[in-house]
Length: 89
Image 1: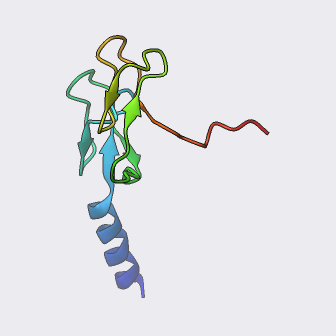
Image 2: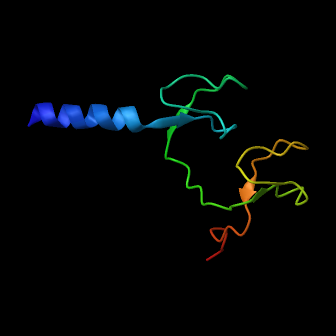
């Protein structure tokens, strides 16, 4: 049983992706540092990208892209348009 558990853990580690907290477009399949800012990459989930999703800057709504990233004007993370997870309870 221990051998199967170790194999499963190894398989999960191979599937894990690492990303920069400040630059979510930087994704690697192994730990390391961000090529833009040097921060340590953190384990992350696979991005939940839906076809035809557009992304915009909270401060510059005229900036619209078809992929996540950062705003070319201020560097803030782009957010999905129509994100409903911002509701207050």
